Length: 281
Image 1 (spheres, helix red, strand yellow):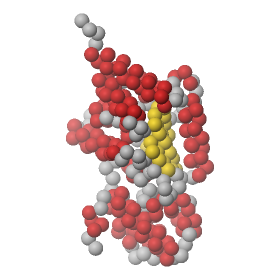
Image 2: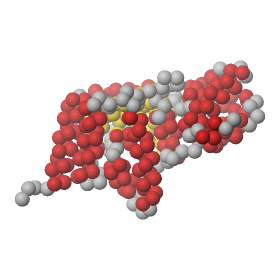
Image 3: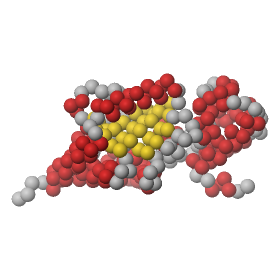
Image 4: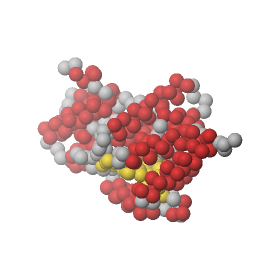
């Protein structure tokens, strides 16, 4: 069979997840029973079967032993784990591509799914000021590839909550900021994304310690992702996910309404545009 050679890593994971489900059912084992033997939760097994979680090398070895699959998972998981995204974010990006709904809070920069090429370039140059231009180009291209999720008019449902600091922090200069905020406003106006802004006047809020992403799937349990500089953690523990969901709900309660938020975003964009043009002579 030659078909899998042409599959991208995400498609490979879905295919391998199907094989995992069939092998588990032949065993026969429930997701919970297999998870206990792998020292993970049953929901983690479900996410591997759905393709939303990677099967890591040591996990592949254990699966072949437990399910007696003759080295299938060891052979196939290496290619399936190839990613164009940074290692700490790769698994989250792959899950994002399969999500039916994404809810996210950002405290310092515009969310990657809403960035323009110019904004993304400014972010990557700030992170890696000595990186050669081809490396920056590659990172920008990977980020813009993620934004193709929004080409579908309805899926995934995307709900973004932004701290006002995201709008006020000038990334790349006034022209870049004006373009980036107008892009978000256009997405909101055509009802492709719901955007709310937590204003400075809200004071302390439920996610002062940083950004937060929640992802929901049609055939797998929800995931939450938290990240910091050069690191990130994808979590499926129901207690943790529920706690993050509560934090997100509290953020939405503190935020301006979507209509008020859109007005603020467009107003700040105009301020940047005017700053870029400078005062009239």
